[in-house]
Length: 95
Image 1 (cartoon, helix red, strand yellow):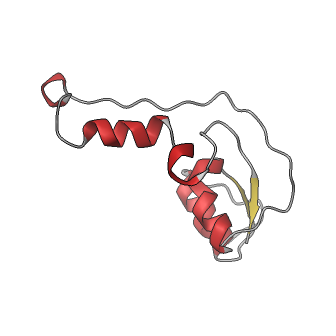
Image 2 (spheres, rainbow, N blue to C red):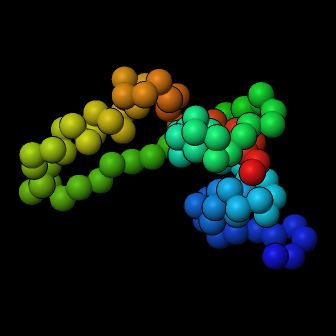
């Protein structure tokens, strides 16, 4: 890996950090489990509000599908599941 490596996806940056190749800035929700079990550490307490958001899109014909309501609830209210905060913050993460 070269100095000042940049990745096209957050997933690649997170994986590189987990492999000890440097640091990554990531969405708190996406790395919550990795932080909890120690695959990543958060070297700083600083979080930055990004204003980023996610959208759940489905075909109109599938909007009433079994399981979709539960999935939507998990996305809309992740704190009810495991105490993780909703997306939109970007903690520094380091392997």
